[in-house]
Image 1 (cartoon, rainbow, N blue to C red):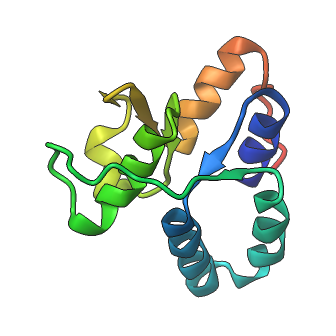
Image 2: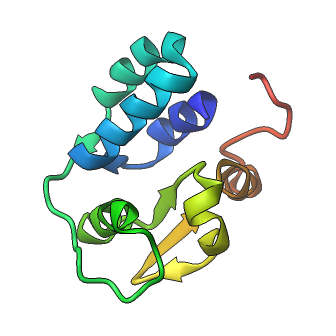
Length: 122
């Protein structure tokens, strides 16, 4: 995922919300604490938006509504998430202009655009 975000940073405008940042920190702390310094460095290149749309007519857990709601409010084209349990059924679908993608789906899109090689470095 790190390589994917670094590649995106070269070609796209990245944004996130404070809510998504805290969820990512919590997940990294529990699963990959060594990745936290890289995550904090990446945040310096990402716009942080403070608004989120919370009135959405989709079947998601209440804790996940601010994630997609932030992407919609920020006028994102894509929402990148590795959360298969909560977002997996939505991967590849577009909600209010935001396409929800897994790292694999987005890597495929970037490879087709020539932004990412098919060879995996990480």
